[in-house]
Structure formats: C-alpha cells, structure tokens
Image (cartoon, rainbow, N blue to C red; front, top):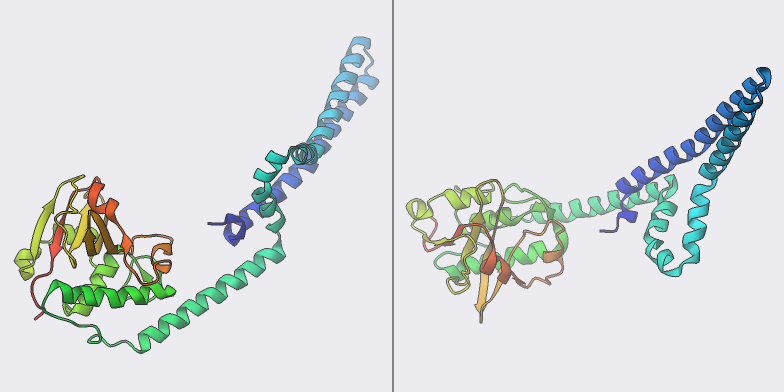
Length: 298
C-alpha cells in the first residue's frame, strides 16, 4: 500500500508537521526568553563570576534556539548531498509534500467516487440476483462449477475483503466465499448466513448432511489427499483460521479458489483463474479437515 496516497495517513502527517512547526517556533522563543531573563537578572545584581556564567548560558540558549529552528533545513540539506540517502527519502518527501489540505481533499473525493462505483457494481449484481441461477446438484464436479462462476464474479473487482452476508453485498472473505458457494449450490437453509472457519471445522458435516470428512493434522501435507471440489479448512481454535475450495491438484501443486487475501489483490489479479495455494495445503501449522460435499441439497 502507498501510504503517501492514503488520506488518513496524510492527515496524521499533516498534524505532526503542524505540531513540529509550532514547537520549532515556541521552543526557541522560550529559550531566548529564559536566557534574556537570566542575563537581565545578572545585570541588575552584578556578580563578575555570575555575569560570566549567565552570559555563557545566554549564548548557549541563543545557539540552541538557532539550531532547533533551522534543524529540519540543515538535515534536509545534508541528506540532499548524499544521493543514496536522498533516493531512499523520496517517498518521505512525497508524504511531506502531499500532506496538505488541498491534496487530502482530492484523495477523499477520489475515494468517495471509488466507493460509489463499487456500490453501483454491487447494486447491479444484486438487482439481477437469482438464487437458482448457479445451482448444480450431484457431485463435487458440480459444486466446482458453482465455485468457478462465483469466483469470476468476485474477480471482476466488485468486492473488498471482509465478513459478508449471504448472498454477499460488497465484501467477501475465505469462509464467506465457501458459504456462498454452498448456498448457491442449493443448501439455502443451512448457508443463508456466513459460517466462519471455526464452524466449518467443528461441525460434524457427516452427521449433518452425510458429507465425507478427512481429518488433517497440524502441519500435515494433504496435497495427495485433496480432490477437485474439496473444501480445505484449518483452524487453531482461537479465531484464527483459513479455508478454500480446491480446483485441481497436479504434481503436488494445488490450485484453489481462495478469498483469504485482505488486500483483495489475489482475486483481482487472477483473471478469473484459480490461484496457487500449495503452501496452505502442504505446510500450514494449523489442524483442520477436508470436507467433501457428496450429497445433494434437499
């Protein structure tokens, strides 16, 4: 993320810059004021040794005030003379330049426009929504067809990351996506709301719907156990879990539909294709299970 184009961050930089500017003025004034007072006191109550000490203290305070006032300029000048340091500080310079009211207002307007466009896309999706549009029943291959169609909707950029109602509005995450797949597949009554990873992990789906379950140990490599259409969930029991749906397994490489990216770049950059999630299947430290949807919705 480019923080220098984040108006929240720039607001903070602007406030800090304002505070530094105030301190840069106030502290020298106080130093000069205290020094002047001490010097006047030494003149009113003359003492040769005391006068010399007061004069030295006064000079030190004047010098300190000068240094504090011009310190930012001195540092900037020194850094500008060293090309390598200057290059590294370019992003900081951009932040300082952009931390002004006019630029921040432009960013706010652009962000608002982006949110309005996202809401318009979402509304277009919702207005044409049909809960039977994607329903397929019968096999894991069928559930994967549903997952593919929904993944392509997500990949269009209509969604940001976050917990979601079912069907979703403008946010999606890993368990929300799998819940949505199962809802569209036909399990409307059970998945009319998002089930989080812990619910997927702790629920006995074999007893509930007759689905197959394959236990997964912490850190276990399950690439050889996964089949297309399998739901892989891992959760450590402390509200820290992840899940996705497997698309293919080829020579140990696992491709999946996965909405676990908090930036949303994974699905936006996927082009509607599955993404490589081999690491999650092969070396994740959390325990879990494979859920294989083997029954039809009633």
